[in-house]
Length: 388
Ligand SMILES: *Cc1c(COP(=O)(O)O)cnc(C)c1O
Image (cartoon, rainbow, N blue to C red; front, side, top):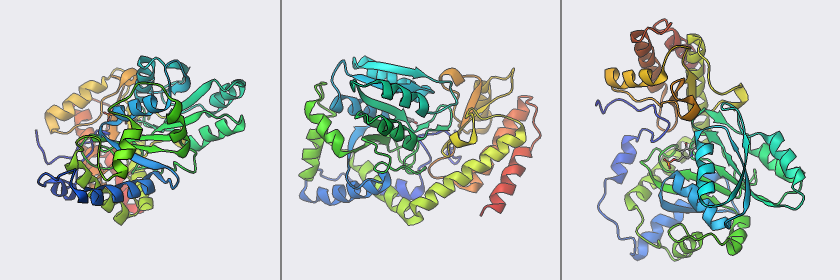
């Protein structure tokens, strides 16, 4: 395996040298009095990332999946009704997790490649006059299909019927790469992780919590221990953790936030848009189609791309790895074998994106795809040159 090549999987993402160096440190005593000097600024700066002033942020040694579990067990009770749409592998997995926690999960099935169905949500919520639905769950950026959903639209759907349900959003593959407005969108619980936009390894579930969620915690009866928000908040207020935190990752997160703020969040989002758009130009030049059904849905952190009929996308990603030592995302769930994914979030430049596009072309040519070497590269080159 060539460890100079970037990865083009949509998480874990490339870890810049600066972050790898920052994390190469001796153990820090998390019970020492000055541990709070690391923790407090992290939480304050994460609030800027989530764009919340009245909310709080907490972090668990875990991954995004742990963040999902934490969201459910702290706010709901077994048997509670929740509303969620399935439009990709990640929304599917969140559904599965809720079902295993014995929630009453009402699912709106959507075609993969579409996003959160705001109209269907609005219609269903309007009919729920007894307010039986306790929470609406939405995946902001469906990493399996490269689809971004309209969270403000879901908030509108809730408000239109004066519905009191909590709004939970998975922003694991969007936070710190695409704009996220927790407070403006009225998000009650936002789940993210360290290994995507934050450019770190997996190991932190990063969760934003609204004041309304703190109230819901008081009456939720689902059993919880490791993921208990209250234990975590109390320990954090006293400058510590209820158990051992991954201190190297926390120090890495400090450096990551510094990098993101030095670049400027708006510039970070603009860079992700540019990188994504160049890749979309390449895909169009190849004559291939994105899984995302229309431009409003295009994700700036990952593109899922259909391969032409008769080809197997797993053979393509295997060949890329075997022949060229480079990883791209496979098609997940319904997209398996028919689509592959380019992760373009985190630490990525025009140069890296062009190398990825060029290597895909070589692998496709090797596998007798109908492709002209350089066609996608040229389209991306023109776009990158002209959009600087
Ligand atoms: C990566 C990801 C997750 C979480 O996965 P983990 O492997 O548990 O970190 C959840 N949702 C989305 C949309 C993701 O992209």
